Length: 259
Image (cartoon, rainbow, N blue to C red; front, side, top):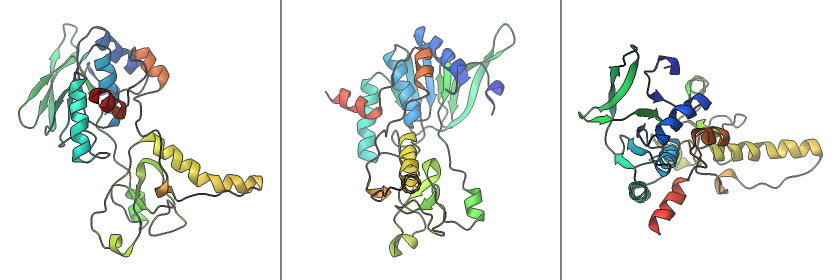
């Protein structure tokens, strides 16, 4: 759905206009409802709560950041978020939105309605429901897909070593006789910007070296630690315009809450 088709009070953080809308709600200490408990949603939720807004995060899983954390880690993160003043409503799948019509005839957000009957009221609904890899072309090409295009530690697709996949669409799994027999593969696409940039740099390194006549020693991607695992919501300029400052990563939030 295009942003222009959304009722007033429902937004995503894509540009400066979105940042201004979020910033005005934060500055007025009003209530923000964040739909989705992935990295980006939690980053903006933490920043908004730290700036004084009342924040509620709604998601349908058992714990926040299910793609990146196991149950234990998710439990610690949930506790840290609540310690930071953020309300967490889990096991709730969004079904509808409730709006009211302003005096000028404009529909404005009133509440998020969940499948189990909850009505979560707020002044702004921030959509942060994540993305799904587009795997249609890979499937048509005969490549193995899971939660993305399945590649090994060298980032080569299982079915064709001449085809690579990186970033949000890459589902990295070691290709062994055991994993080849699995119907559902472990792990999934990272959904994070940092690993995608490191994958791109790692894959480009030998080609760049050949152009310069130099050799490069590389380890396999799976053996690398990818820094930048927590991604900020929007550019630094966008966050500053929203009055939210630099984001606090989920990992740092856990550390602060534990102190």
